[in-house]
Image (cartoon, rainbow, N blue to C red; front, side, top):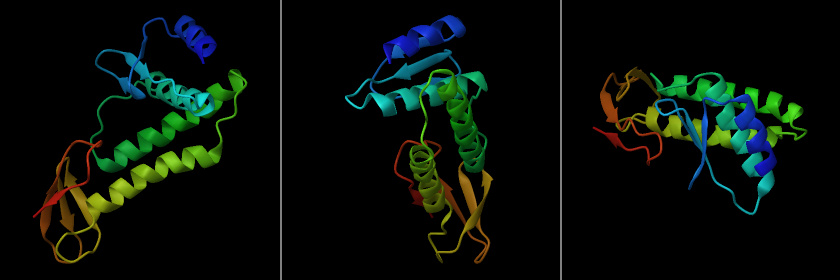
Length: 149
């Protein structure tokens, strides 16, 4: 993975590549944080995914669906970059990653009153399409999807 990081630094000189605890992209600091574990293949795929966010200039998301669309778009770029760097980003890996966001979205959008699906009306509020009741969710995408009545 070090060879890819060196190559990416040359192509993206305005992006900072920093070793850390987890993979992430910060639009504010133009930093890709990466983590190297024993599974170098998935590390490379995740790194390319974060480069996808940087390439697409992703910043904060407006809605939960917006986040899912940005994640999907970043994986498309990762697959294209994989061809360039002679690594295949497997569809099963992408699907597993996107499924975690879909599961998160499903939990957040499920009405805590009646169990039906709701629609997001603002970054922190959903409204049930069945019982017409609102509930609040946290803005943090990394924490457990709490729903406050």
